[in-house]
Image (cartoon, rainbow, N blue to C red; front, top):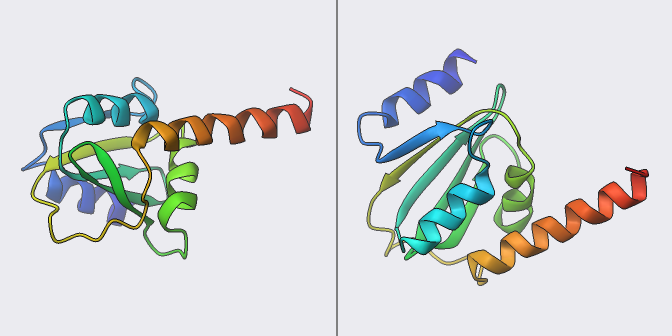
Length: 125
């Protein structure tokens, strides 16, 4: 946890938006950044993992979970399932970052909700 905290703390000097996932879910944060057409990096930290989402003009263009093979859309869907942790957004130019997602943020959120609904239906909730 110390390594996770120090990496997030390093970014806090530049952070324009930060909070706790318990208060504002990642879907809400991504919706806000999409509406505001923000570009930059969103770092999401749970107790044991760090995820990163890059945005250009509000659209998710890349996503990774550090130390794992989870990337692109699967990483976004997993991060959207995290219900505890912290997030920090740093606004910056992402013009040099390749778009690996090729989907509007709204469509990612809809697909994540559909997947969650299917899992809940399959498990009997």
